[in-house]
Image 1 (cartoon, one colour):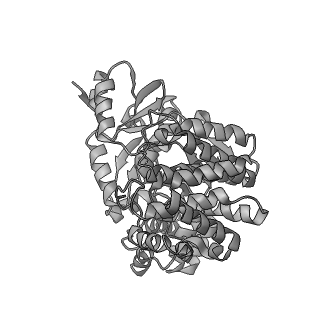
Image 2 (cartoon, rainbow, N blue to C red):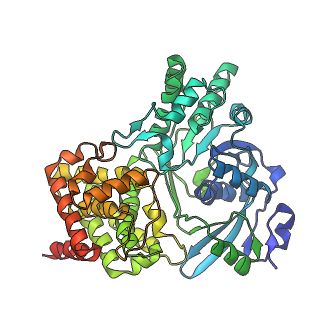
Image 3 (cartoon, helix red, strand yellow):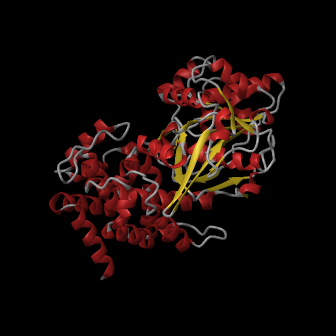
Length: 494
């Protein structure tokens, strides 16, 4: 019989399960985190749990909150088990479970007054957020903050009286502190974006600029927004995994997290309000995180896109199954070697070939259960961040782009909404209907796919890319994804 997770039942868990050696009452808050999904609890919260377990910096516990209804559901489930989370790390030959307890309170989304009160609390010295790549109100074509987005416009019209966005809440908290003569907290993005600190600063100050330019200038001059690179493959949790946790470890957890053993966090050391000693548990603090994040975004995230769309078209369900497909694995390796890594700038103390091999090993981990559908999600946000910048650099350098054009064409074919076997692909993007219309036009007029300036910008005017894309998409429709990948690999070997 599995034990329902709570602080009262920790002593009933088996000896193979790690449990906190600290009590909740020994912790005090230092961080408010917006968006307590799986990645946050497998990454930032897990690092803090390890720090607290060592008896260090226990005044940096987390207050969780969010802005979406799914955050509210998450908070209710976590509150029912005393804000504990079981983190299961998995490698091919080993699974380990640890119950973590770095979060000590949760403020319900929608309660703006309570959230702002927490942000204005002098004990809050860091506000962090994980709101996904698509949650920063970025114009896909310009990659700049979009002040005209309806959510942002609504917060501005309300003059931050009752903000609905993460950036409105952060701005309201900072401005309340300014009015009270309190120092600002540090704002730390934990999302997978290039220059995530700069992007967050643009969103917060850009929103405030719509209301009061003096406050916006103060925000830009006085608030720290360190850039950071985060990495740990953390899929959505399935009922199958919840049952495995009950069967293998005897834990009944409403919101467990299953993830790989690998983790990485690289941060710029800009924390004027103080920070926990995360370097003691493996976080790298550097003067400039840009080389690390560019490496990760282009090789790991770009690599995910490279295997996702052919696998999705071929009805492959899991990521590790895609890596077991010799052709897809070869395509990934060739694309990274020939077109991606050559335009990734050097990274301090890092061998990019070794990093690539680590990525391939991680993708092939059969225990993770990461799905191809998750990798295909939100391509309209991810392609302009993970694939198209590499393509631009390769074009500028006069390097090969055929593989990158193939990735883009495979994405287009995926958005047609049907696999090569005729199976329907369920909507998998915030603008899925629009993408499907474009993809169906592109079946007979390939260049029409590139006529989406919010995604491709001026790339549609580049004859070399346009010709490569159109020819490749035509070949995909004529002979299928496998044949096109085979042609790409054969051309490389000549």
